[in-house]
Length: 112
Length: 112
Image (cartoon, rainbow over all chains, first blue to last red; front, top):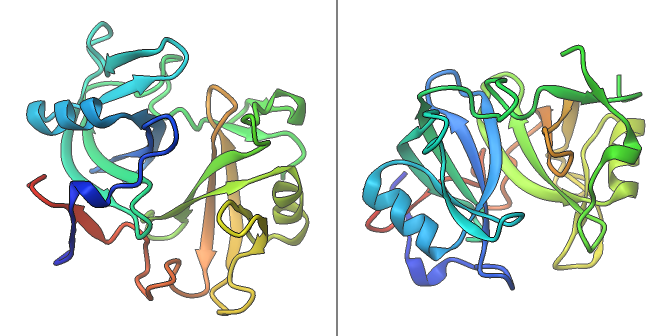
């Protein structure tokens, strides 16, 4: 992990967003995928808790602010293209609004 | 894992794509994020090896076809919104074109 990426190298999409994979730092379970704009990324780094941009609500979203299921940042990685982030967190509760620990609790019908 | 999602419930984006998180089924390392269209998803399920849609090249992409670093599918999950996939794989080699096992081998400068 010697290499690092400058902010200016991040490749935000046309909406100014990056997809973000959120992984449990302990269990390594993939919890969710959400989106960050520049402000959400800065707030995540400044506060040590995940912030995202809600595309459906069109607003900044401090994960767990109302539910209490906040996520404490332990590591942040950038992919080789600079267009996707991986954040590793210690979750204070379920990541999914359904109460499941991960949003990926369903399989695809017919996919075995 | 009792719940399953129908194909008709998948929420493809305006380009007909879904983001896909690829995770090593053994080590649970997050390897990469790529995109699938409907054809890539069908081919992945039919062949048991990951296929993606390359946004930069504008073409279907059988991961590892030239490098040999194919990925054998072991599980496929859909998130609560139906707009993101998680595929767990056994990788036959590094996921990243740089030779790193994961594309997320860099940190963000100043992010600690």
